[in-house]
Image 1 (spheres, rainbow, N blue to C red):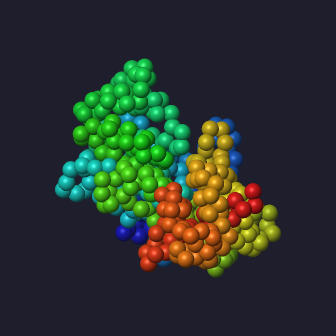
Image 2: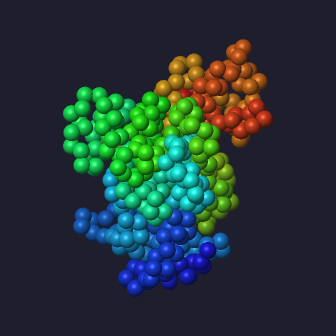
Image 3: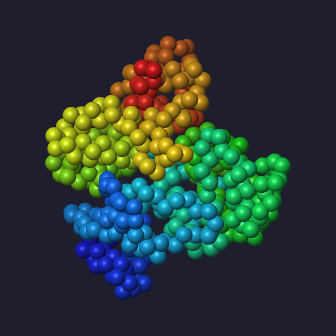
Length: 424
């Protein structure tokens, strides 16, 4: 990797329109690897104004920061990663850091940079709520290698729990020059016609946030022979039913501890500089989950403006009392509202039957640190003869994760949510 100062020199040349093709490749790689990030901070900008964010070039020993207007950064980013044809996902606003290996893994998963047919199977990215699945595939959609393999562009859709399937399929049809799919009577017929159109295309289809296997199966049928299909889901059951092999599923991990602390330093630099040990404890308590780290950093920045220190809030966040009550990051907007973290997590627990939901909540009350359980402990907590059916249900819904040796993990953020259910 180039040093932060060398990266800044390449970036300066590109911003001033004097950069070379080699500069472009270096900065593309650094952005995709998370070595260069752009932080907008918390501020209000007058209508018509141009806010100045901060470019941060990270290194193992140091980092370089300098201001750059948001419009200049957006223009640079568009030159480096042109918006693909079709319907791409929005460029992620969350900081993309610590995901270079994951990005390469998913590129291999869909067959990019390998000597095999990239359209041979459905590829699935699975992981905890808030682990960054959408951010990852949004960056992937603009990767230069993806543009090379799929020159006709990207079709993206985010389904959620109750998707407007006909509207989504019709939107894909319109982007392909078909204005008639909304008049087709059923999704199955729309899929058949869409598939016929996609036979002549080389596109990457990205179906984000799938909750029902049947919904994912529709897009499997819609995929043309020369198109790739990438699905994201938090549900193990969906991944297992849609994947042809275990190798087709990529379980996106949380950040490493080093990258999680680096993210906190980028988001709240003065706080981490003043309370580094406390922030490291916070990162460990939140188990390096990107969603929780973004929310925690925003709360800390807001509290620090009052100049009375953040020690109490650090403890409150570490104990879990603050994060789940807070608003999610702005990229999780739903309609005209930004949901709380609790509301995002309730999507997973509201679909459970009452008994399974109660069992999930009881695990939160008795969870050790880290929150791992074996069958005997869950049997005792739930007071049931056979805990296996409930364990299977929680694993299928992405609320428990097998970690080997007969043990199952619940992420710290889900532990906080489970405890909150007991107070409802």
